[in-house]
Figure 1 (cartoon, rainbow, N blue to C red):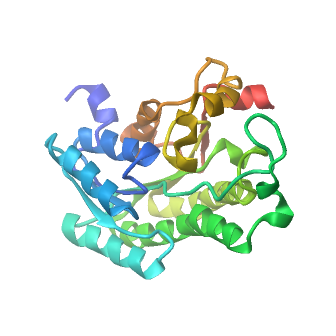
Figure 2 (cartoon, rainbow, N blue to C red):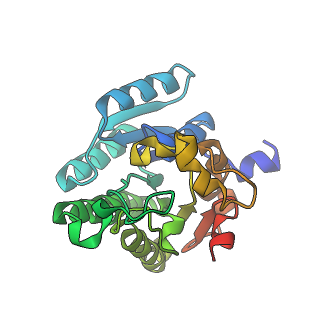
Length: 272
């Protein structure tokens, strides 16, 4: 095998991707499976999960799925146990699942949005945003580590956001503090788990075209505000994130841990 192939070799790895039936999670699952990993996708959408798993297995990739709500702790523990039983171990976990918790206090065109005002935010909307964008990462990492420690190591890659570093007025209020906490959690876990050979890193995407927020960035008008922030004149396609995911999951990324890696087309540079 050529040296470059060895650097990015993930063949045979046992991989879990949460929220992998669409968007960035699907991109993670695809790049890993395409390069020979054995991938299990967790997703709450049974139809989407079934369709995506079928499309990937039709290409000859080793992919299967489990319908799991990342907010259900017993279900998550059972799902991880099922992967370990089927694959014999768990090597790499992408803690990717998350949601847009609701509207921000501004619209994409800059008008005030009463539905997103703090006094009008339903408590259950806040609680759901924190549960699925922060607590689910804790649950995912906790279950990953149960299986990684006995095997002597692994890689955990968490999807955060550039919203963890700035404030976005068009995004639901709980999203920014949840993602900022995710960043701190990732660095804390890297401190704790490095001694066990477990690397923990976060990917911080900028605007990407996915299904989050109802897929609104597929709408040209909604997309324009984000495109104007990009230094290269466009927002991200999920294909753009695959190389970084493969890097962090492979021997090429062996010296990354506790890293918060921004991938945003330069948007953060312009914003700040």
